[in-house]
Image 1 (cartoon, rainbow, N blue to C red):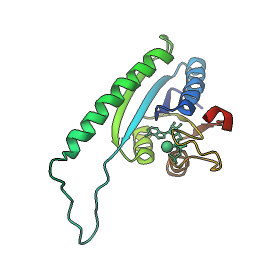
Image 2: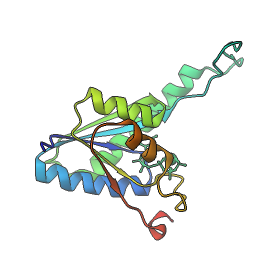
Image 3: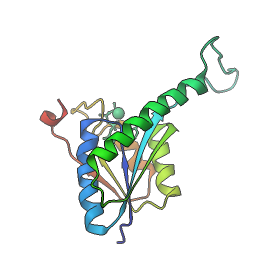
Image 4: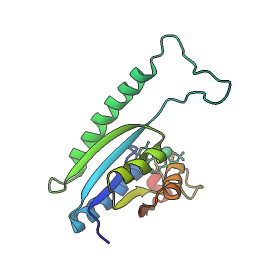
Length: 156
Ligand SMILES: Nc1ncnc2c1ncn2[C@@H]1O[C@H](COP(=O)(O)OP(=O)(O)OP(=O)(O)O)[C@@H](O)[C@H]1O
Ligand SMILES: [Mg+2]
């Protein structure tokens, strides 16, 4: 198996940083590039037959998403600069969308060899075996995915 591109999806949580450590180890061993991807959840809209898109006066959805993206980009670049050693090549990206779908699409579009993510993220409810983004990504993606376990103590 040739591992040349590793996707690390980040939600800025401690569990996701544990997955980044694993991604760094693998990138070193396989001389792979790390793709760091943070998905800003899109603003929900009402869709379906009989529903018109709802416009709330004074609420500019694209502008709001752009602002969230800007903040996420700053945070992700800072994280990558701090945590990823210089000898490893990194591409950092922020996208707006539904997290698992966006992770899966990104992995396919960028010829990712392996996704490395944690069992949990920001919510971190350990009575669920897997967080919903982790679970959906495994179900939707045909790309090998390494799931890093996070113990209850580590989530606090
Ligand atoms: N918005 C996101 N963008 C990129 N990666 C994400 C995002 N949300 C979660 N992830 C990835 O998925 C992993 C598991 O997080 P997940 O969201 O599934 O668990 P959770 O936050 O504990 O539970 P839930 O979101 O279902 O309430 C994270 O460690 C991170 O790698
Ligand atoms: Mg989550």
